[in-house]
Image (cartoon, rainbow, N blue to C red; front, side, top):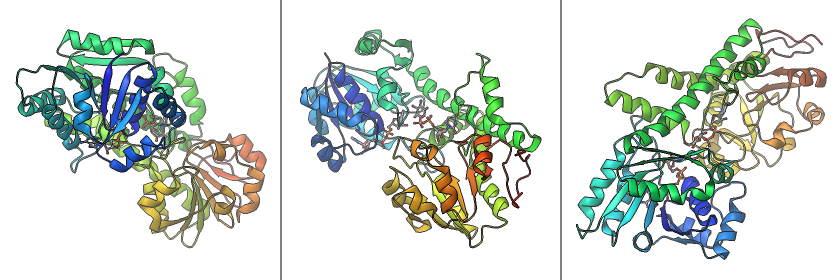
Length: 450
Ligand SMILES: NC(=O)c1ccc[n+]([C@@H]2O[C@H](COP(=O)([O-])OP(=O)(O)OC[C@H]3O[C@@H](n4cnc5c(N)ncnc54)[C@H](O)[C@@H]3O)[C@@H](O)[C@H]2O)c1
Ligand SMILES: O=c1ccn([C@@H]2O[C@H](COP(=O)(O)OP(=O)(O)O[C@H]3O[C@H](CO)[C@@H](O)[C@H](O)[C@H]3O)[C@@H](O)[C@H]2O)c(=O)[nH]1
């Protein structure tokens, strides 16, 4: 049993802190946000993450999980201190390190005995060394020792508990073998592979992994755009590609590009790191540009399907950057909805969970509704931006009745083209032949014969 303090109780800190508690450790999660801590103490979860509430409650009851905004006290009480604060995108694309540095100062000031400081936030190479230096400069007693370890996090929002409990690997970068061994042992109950390396490589692995996944997505979106123009079907193409184990079938779903709190900022940060180091990472820059452009594919399809967006009413289904999360950071909807409005459309929108979070960001651009039915009533077209299960499973016959005309643009390829042809929709998805019925023949790609 280790005594662990996790500084930062957001998506990563709260989930990993809870999972560390669940495998038998005594964990204090702390945060500068007193409202978050007050909620957590009552067993209320400030974010939407499936299964998290139950696991937090279980570990509070078992007296393994505690919450506080007294960060100094929490640091003094533990032997392993995890840093899990945000590293958002700075003004020039760089990772904004102010929160990590602030935590390092606080740790230095409260270094009352030997501790291992573990960085879980996604940080540029050199951060471990910088954290070490800041702690040294701030510790009151220079004889108190400590070690710094990098242990980047790979969980995905929406399946965070599952990803943490069954992690594919734990990357541990350290300058001290002893400290690395202790963090490896902490992970033993997860029965995962441990990959031990130096601080710098561990920090780089996180950015490289995210940039590679982002590259896969931009690549398949590029292939999808070609597929549309030559009459191929990207779903078949990615399935066929994925059968080659050197390629793998995961992360080859074409759509409206990646969003979320990680890929957009981490690709920018890596591009910035490369530039600072004297390397112009053109491939990565193209991945970013391709992703930005991919958002507009669905706007163009809608405009082509409807002739013009001027005066048209569009029913948007899904606002979060992916299903099973309320996170709106860099969600494609934040770009797409204002663009629809700029082109003269009015927007009605629905999201089962991210409704409030979305409203906080772009409320002036759309009206939001509590159900798919209310949203789509009398709309000129339906636009799918997130593949929430209730959207994928919606009653298409009813959808057709609600819409003025059966026009659907699907940014997530939720339905087979055959199904949509059978249902009688004019259906435009990404990288697949358009399905048209009646008089609307707007998209360049092939029409499915009915
Ligand atoms: N969200 C993910 O899916 C994910 C996955 C892997 C890695 N990461 C990385 O993990 C880090 C955290 O991401 P997140 O999504 O959990 O962020 P978040 O914004 O959800 O949470 C960060 C928390 O840190 C708190 N905080 C800020 N400064 C603090 C301080 N000085 N002391 C105590 N608390 C402080 C904030 O109040 C906030 O609650 C980032 O570097 C991110 O890139 C995120
Ligand atoms: O084939 C795919 C897979 C994903 N996406 C999109 O890519 C984005 C990111 O998806 P996902 O990776 O599932 O979500 P995140 O929760 O952002 O997780 C990523 O970012 C985290 C933060 O760094 C990492 O820890 C995870 O390993 C990494 O998958 C979303 O907008 C998805 O819609 C696609 O368009 N096509």
